[in-house]
Image (cartoon, rainbow, N blue to C red):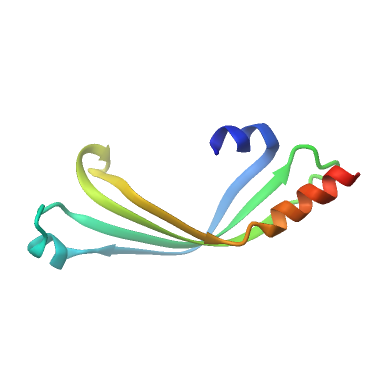
Length: 103
């Protein structure tokens, strides 16, 4: 995915709107493994610009992401991602790619 973005996009970023960081203290107490767990959810707009687009028009896509984290040795601040889910409609990007190819 990252190689494809680098090859085909001149711009890719997320503009974050809202973030929720949830600690699962009860799961830590009652869980079988005793590891700390967190859920980070965020609402964002991804912005893409296709390299082949002569207009370099920004394409915006609304996203909602859920990241499940678990305590680990090392990792970022002692956590690693165990599951990541993204909810989005990629059709605006696909539409712009189609428009760009016709030009």
